[in-house]
Image (tube, rainbow, N blue to C red; front, side, top):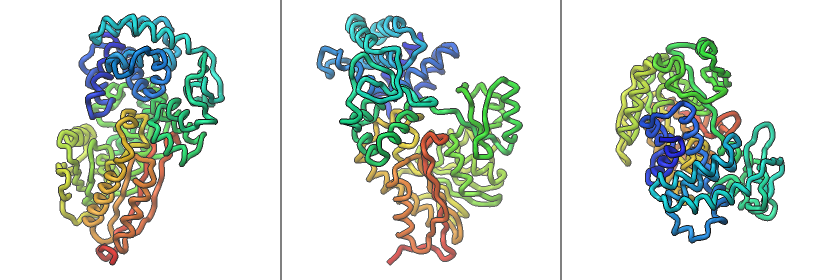
Length: 459
């Protein structure tokens, strides 16, 4: 199997699956005998096509001389793969992008479509020039940020005019659904929305959290340097950012549990709770375990943590991560949807709620196509319910940390404000917004103090 064939197979599976594209890639690569270089290429192709789907449609559809509904989904995947290579992978020669992709039609079971694919991709190839500009426009395709934003020059205009139709340009050029482009343009304006677009369309950096039970950051950084791997410390004392991506399981110290993969913004959450040895902590929505294990590390492995999640299979990942990192004192509890969390009293609680994931669209690119604006109302009700349940189970004077990987105010400070107003005596001690790209994923946390007298609803 070739890298392009593997990518086509993953894209086809992603249409009918509700999971994350990253998991589908891992599953496929576990079964495909590909070289490390080809494995990286598969990842680049799949993530790139999913992130850039709307942009690729804008480049491809004008050259499809048939009703879009009559084109097989597998054929759209093939066309998108070819167009992505032509428009965004400068290291792939145009002839290779066209010829190798044309052969995919037979691989996906549509050999009769090779001529059609060839014709469309050759038109797209003629459209893509080798010139770049720093100015957006209808013939300027958002390419990457780098030191300065770069736009690839097209032979003819294919995108909406960013002056006359800024929302249309954001949606087509940065590959967002129209409703999200409208929402973010209204909130952020032209350039900040574009900055988010560049960030979410780039491969996110690899961050790890060094396991303070096993090593310290500088010792692990030197261990990496001895293996000729560059990593720089972040502002969190356990964080390291890698200069390049590496297969995580191949990194020094993986089996020994010297680190856990965790974005820098996520590391801030457990630190905000500041767990202490001897604490009994409720962790709602704990899977896959990054924050759970961080709580245990910060408490010197001497806290009792009740880790809840509705998904039994995902709870297995919590257990596995605890075992690799040498974490003790974590009890996993499957919390059925709508069920009540374990009874308290707890010294503290972490509520890392299900959310829109709008702060992590680079890592979870499929979210931008699955999320609907109508879902926010349900999410906010659930988030509010979970936060109230956590507060009710924490002893007087205890701490609750609420967190999301969203950049939507309604899911963040909006939920916190509602709960603080609803429960007399509950106070907001601190909150923090992580802005996407500065220097990592987007997200939010708030630390709440439960009153010395048990909170009760305001009359």
